[in-house]
Length: 339
Picture 1 (cartoon, one colour):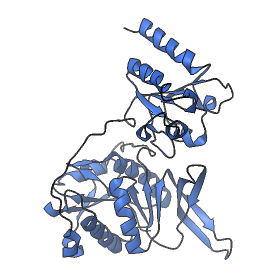
Picture 2 (picture 1 turned 90 degrees about the horizontal axis):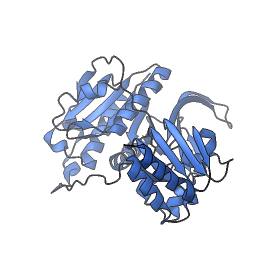
Picture 3 (picture 1 turned 135 degrees about the horizontal axis):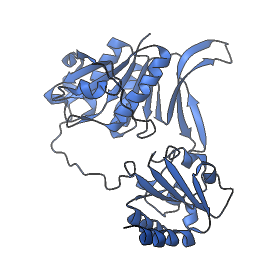
């Protein structure tokens, strides 16, 4: 059975977290299917990159290393991926739902006539029976993602075309290294056979790199607010609590839509997925669209006036009360009892 491929994003010799998350997930999928995990690395000065990838489960690493392949440009990378996929015939191909992945994956899918599910939040292996014809399909990739603005969860399959392609949002999969990784087999890609002059029509004159100002995904403590905070000014309380705790401020989609917080702070199916050590949910009801983005938190504290709010069902500690009363007390007593 053909293998699972993961396209790996690499910047300055470091593999992106989303690619390592995909390798981790690919290991589980490959175990179910009885196949191998292969990684595709394209760039320059990639010596030793197989060590990083093997640590997360890559068994075979295809390396296309050339000065003209870095920094990233869409056309040459897409041509190389298409060439490798045509030669290797993977059954599943995974990309990160990043700027790079969202640029590359549709082009590759279109060229290979394979179909693509974007922004998946879960991947599983399962069977399917076509209702009209009764035809049975075994071991398909269930590509699961929110639809209609996050109001439903759609499971999408691609029965007849290969590879089954999906982009996966950053942070929704766990990133777990292999306990005792074996060295990966390295296959050097003769990439020039896949390229033409038109692939280099775009030239990069200069690059401006700006660090992300809000790093909510990497925060160990998050204070998140919902529509129950009442206003943008009400969110000021969350920033005060976050400053005391050394935390980052997050928000539900309802709060972002109401203009209480920036979209970069949105947590949930249509925002960022987080796994902090401590998650304090303030004025958040806890609908599935939000909890899907934070239910991996080590500890959850909820503050809500409604004792029956869904968030309380997953909270380790539930405080029933008005956020405007509870949060100032939390700030006060934390300052009194901390050194």
